[in-house]
Image (tube, rainbow, N blue to C red; front, side):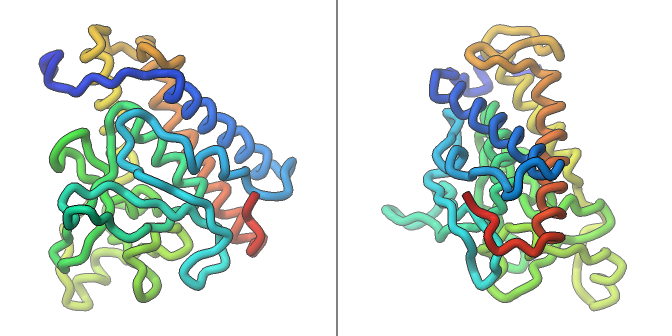
Length: 255
């Protein structure tokens, strides 16, 4: 167990409570859409401005389509301390239904960061509040890529686009058969969920609380157990919304 002062303490104010409420309202609209009670996907306007206190998402806006793909996106700028002084990285594009999951992953100090692959291109990873701890490839979380597969972009310039429709699995045996390097296995979505839960536990300890499933985060009306369930629920819903949007061939999936 880390020392109490080893985790940056986050004070959850009214803005944080409003952000959680916005995320939950968005998820409720996702349910209505998946069940056919709502004709269009949820209204993304409530989540583009929502942030938890330690968020690494600097700005975001909804766009009805992006990069030649007639699907909606959240165009977001992610903080990168390594970028040239006074400049930020280009916008990256996310499905709104996975962007809300990104917000929830940041509740307890998780953040999104840029890192360099061995192929020398930038990718977005999910990590802890400092350094590279965690460093889960965001594409693997979105695509729910299995341990024995890699996640590949389906079009040129795809390193800017994290929408699930632009991603595909390539099994590692196939990658090796093409003469390309790959790890024997890779981490899966569930590992990222458990990492976020670990950050929640550490934040509870930083607040002087016991890290039990029934422990509620001071300032937020959510327990450790509920948070873990919420992450899985939000990801399952995002998968379902993605499938319905593709099934309907929607080019009007916007508020």
